[in-house]
Image (cartoon, rainbow, N blue to C red; front, side, top):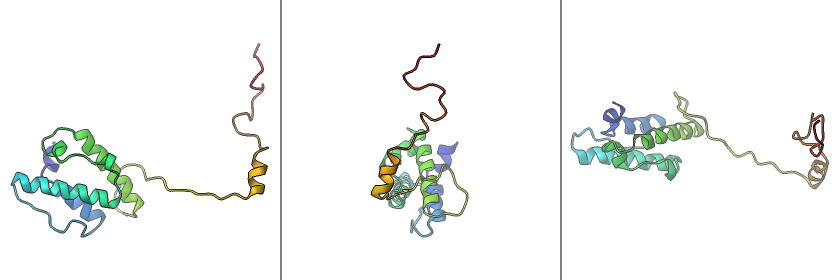
Length: 133
């Protein structure tokens, strides 16, 4: 299962190092549960440092004890969005994060916009207050 493949944290750490080489310095291949949970913790720390929000992180036990795989999958999608945003050129998962599109308008442009018809009323055969009959 997916949980069994990810449980030791090695695949997750390697994923981080593929996206951002050298981010996780030492990945343990030990079969000891403590070392495997440490790998998962290193993965989560790397996710946070790369920009994954705390909301999209999971608790180590969610994966290690198979408690909440939905949280793990949500995290992987979030990491996929962040990877695209930081310029990762490999295969991706999830939609790209939206970026700010700040616009500055002059007073004249703002004033002109006050009298422009919106798309909400455009093309209507009847006004908003008229009855159909």
